[in-house]
Amino acid sequence: MKLIVQIPCFDEELTLPATLADLPREVPGLDAVEWLVIDDGSNDATVEVARAHGVDHVVRLTNNKGLAEAFQAGLDACLKLGADIIVNTDADNQYHGGDIPKLVAPILAGEADMVIGDRDTDHVEHFSPLKKRLQRWGSAVVRRASGTNVPDTTSGFRAYNREAALQMQVVSRFTYTLESIIQAGKMLVAVDHVPIRTNIKTRESRLFPSMWAYVRRNTLSLFRIYTLYEPLRVFLAAATAVAVVGAVIWVRFLFFFISGEGEGHIQSLILGATLFIVAVQLAALGVLGDILAGSRVLQQRILERVRRVELQVGVEPSHYEPGAEPTGQPATTGARAGRATGKVSDADEAESAPSREAARL
Image (tube, rainbow, N blue to C red; front, side, top):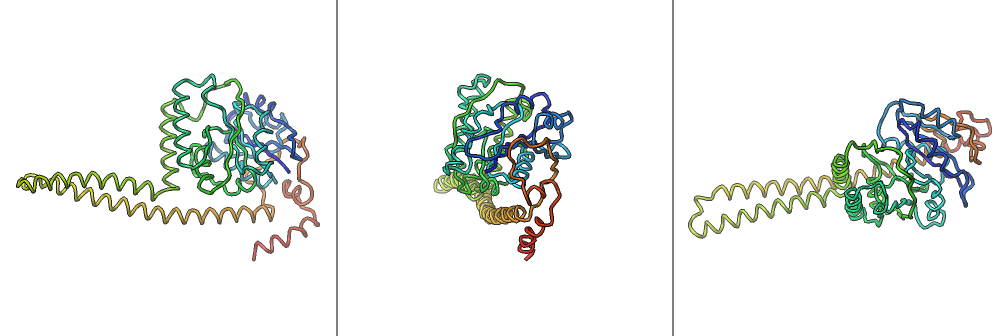
């Protein structure tokens, strides 16, 4: 089995060496461990530093597309490079790379498809009391929305087996952490968590300029993601709230009407009717959203099948560049090695021809 550790990077030439120094080259239960760096349009020497420190694979995006896009590009590349397990970590050396064996252990044991590293945020020294409280509240909301029991939902230190990675498709442009957990919960992917260690803070986060900007963006992202997966529940809840307000206003009008003062409260009757119409429209939007959500699930399954076909026919990763010479024992012999380098022998071509013919049919 092959493990690939992917690291999304944007201008990380200063912190990347320490991050790579922490990563293992051997993990019990795995035949090979390789490293992949996703260069998210860096303006510094991130790629050169990665190659100098023995990174096996590099995916270079043409411009800065954001963490979520870089994460998804890394997943796609790892799958096409033959990964059986994919570990994602941050380039700022926030997570202790020595905990990777602990992170992948539930997957190797067949107990989980996706494992999240739990930082125990209440005891992270450089987290302020406010940030710790917000982390607890935010994780509680995500747990409820996803139906999982992950205590640290914003942790970027996580592992996926091949099946979970094939199903994962992030659409958020801000961050992948929340959406991937909610998506895993809705797809009934087996999710687990393990305690991990963190390193000393090396720099401020680049995802947000301030704490309140982080709260605002994550709140909007969480609402958008949850609405994407549960539109009927969201819109019916809104419709119910509006209908209750309209009913209260109607009751008020009815009270005055029975008292013989209805002529002076026609406005309440009109407002109540308006709110009732709005409630009906919100309910209709929920039904339409639920239909679209069903179509999205079908599209996601089609995408998963496309990915499987791509793996069978040996489609190369997008924006892929070889890194340093692999120091592990990569599973790139025969056809897979040829596809990774763009050179396929006659024997490999003959071997892959039936697969291409089957995909064509």
